[in-house]
Image (cartoon, rainbow, N blue to C red; front, side):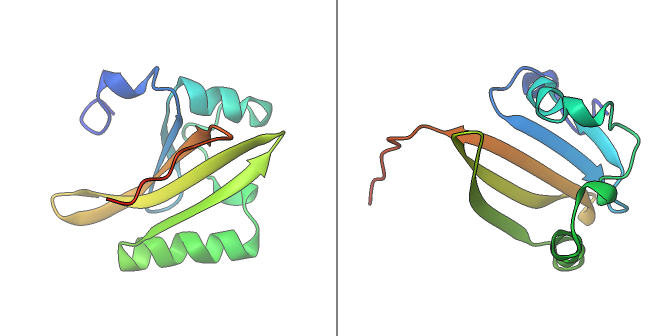
Length: 112
């Protein structure tokens, strides 16, 4: 896994989760493991049972089109941005990366 994620991601202050093209979880940084601790150790397991049919269709579309999906959620009083995009190896789609970033309530927005 070192060739995919360097050590800097381990303690990053956002959740980083990586799966392969079959939806098998390959990597979770510390924040991701904390976020999903109620589900147990997910590395080596499919992420599909955790998703509804709409989410599964989005995952399939992202993998098929080398796409990106970005949205915000509010959970437990925290607003988060979810950024999902493919990762590639030798130019070919190899799976998905999800970044889950807690947003401050007063996040500034700039037009540049």
